[in-house]
Amino acid sequence: MLTTLSIRNVVLIEALDLDFGSGLGVLTGETGAGKSILLDSLGLALGARGDSGLVRNGAPQASVIATFETPAKGHRVIALLTDNDLSIEPGEPLIIRRTVKADGGSRAFVNDQPCSAALLRDLGASLVEIHGQHDDRGLLNPRGHRALLDAFGRCDTSVVAVAHAAWREATMLLAESRAAVESAARDRDYLAHAVAELSTFAPEPGEEATLAEERATMQKGARLTDDLTAVTDCLTGSDGGLAQLRQAARRLDRITGDYAPLAEVLEALDRAVIEASEAEDRLARAAEALIFDPARLDSIETRLFDLRGLARKHQVQPDELAALNAEMAARLAAIEGGEEHIAALEADVVAKASAYRTVAGALSDARRAAAVALDAAVAAELAPLKLDAARFRTAVLPLDEGQWGAGGADRVEFEISTNPGAPFAPLVKIASGGELSRFILALKVALAEQGGADTLIFDEIDRGVGGAVASAIGERLSRLSGSNQILVVTHSPQVAARGAGHMLIAKSSDGIVTRTGVHALDEGQRREEIARMLSGAEITAEARAQADRLLEKV
Image (cartoon, rainbow, N blue to C red; front, side):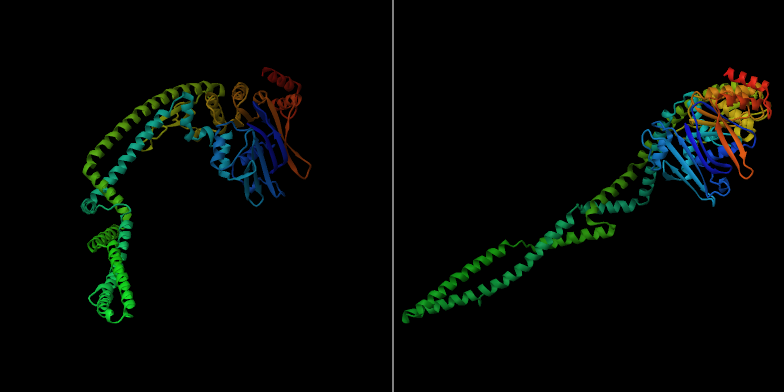
C-alpha cells in the first residue's frame, strides 16, 4: 500500500508531502488544477520516462519519493529485489526515489540503493495499477489475462507444468540420442578400426609412467654392466692383474728358500692375491645383482614408443587412451543398437506428448468453464455502469503446438463489443477513455479476490456520467477498497462522497508564480467541496443539503 508521496519541483508543484491511508481515497479539484501532475509524479517514481519537461521552471532537478508498506513475505516485489541484488530489511518500508535533472538525466533508488528505470517499471507494476485513458498495463495487457482467468476459476496448472517438463525432457533426450547415433554412423569404419586397434593394444591409465620408469632403470643397469665387465677383464683376464700376481707369487715361492729376506715379500704377494680374489668375487656378485635384460628392455621400449604413437595419432595423452577406447566403443555400440534405442525413445515421447495433451485439454475445459462464469460476473456489472449495450467475453483460444508450454495450450484475452452487432476486439483498441475505465472497474470487481497490485488508481473513471451511474461507480469502488487501497481522481460528487479520505487539488498564484497544492479535507471542508462539485462556482444551500444527503448514504 502507498503510504506517502513527496514531490519536489515537478511542473507547478514546488513542494508537496502527502499521506495516504487504506480504503478509498478520492482526489478532486477544478479542471486544470493539476491532478495530472500528481499522477505524472507518481508515474515517475514507478518507472515512467524521466522527461526534463517535468522539472519546474528554474529548478535544477525534480524529485519524487514514494513510500510503500513493507512487502509481505513471498510478495513478487521481494523476488524482484532479490533477483536484482537489492536488499530490504524485515519490517522496513519500501522507499522509491526518482530524480530528473533539468538537462534530462535521471537516477533511481530503492531504499537508497541505485537501480534502473526498468526495475522501477517492474516494481511499479507489482505495487500500483494506474487505470486511465492511456494506460496499457494491468488488465489491458493480454499477457496477464490467462493467469487472471486461472486464478478466478481456480484452474490448477501444476499438473500441466509437470507433464510439459516430462515431455520436453523426453524430446530433448530423443534429439540428443539421434544426433549421437547419426554422428557415430558417419564414422562407423573409423570407429571399428580404432576400437579394434586400441582393444588389442589394451592401454592402461598410468602405463606410460610405469614403462618409462622401468626403461630408465634398465638403461642404468646396461651402463653399469659394461663398466663392471671392463673392470672384471682388467682384474681376471689372462693378462689381468690377478693372474700376474699369482704368477709372481709362484716364482717367488721357488726362490724364497735360497734367500730368506724374500719371505716377507712372498707374504705380501699372498695377501694381495687373497684381496684381489675377494674383489673378483664381489664384482661377480654385483654384476649378478644388476637388473638388466636386453630382451626385456627392447620389449619395454617397443611398448612405450607404440603407446606414445597411439596417443599422438588420437591427439590425446597416453593416460587418456583407455577412456577414449571406452568412449568410441560406446559410440560403436550405439550404432549397433541405435535403432532399437531410438524406437524406444520415440515411443516415450509419444506417450509423454499424449499425457500432456490429456491434462492440457482438461485445463482448457476448466478455463472455458471459468470464462463463462467470468463473463457472467462482468456482464452483471456493465448495466449499472451505463455499459448495458456492451458485451464482454473471455476468449480462450488454442495456441499452435510450438507455443504450448507449462501454462497449457491456450491463450486468453479479454474482449469487448461496445455496440449491438459490433465485433469483439481487445479492450484497449475499441473503448473510449471513460468506457475503458468503467470496463476495468467491472473486471476488477469480478476479479476482486484474485490479487494483483495492492494499490489501484482510477483516473476520471466517472467521465461523462452522473446520477445513478456515478453512484454505481462509487459503490463498486468502495467495495473494491475492502481488499485494495483505491485512489480515484473524480469529478463526481457521488463518487467523492464514498471516500474514506478526501484530498483537494488546487492551483494558486501570487501573480508571479503559479503553484499546485494538495490539501487533506476534514469533514466540514469535504462537505463544502462536494457541494461545489454539485453546484459549480457558487455553493448554494441546496448544494450543501444535497452534499449532506450523499454523505449520509455512505
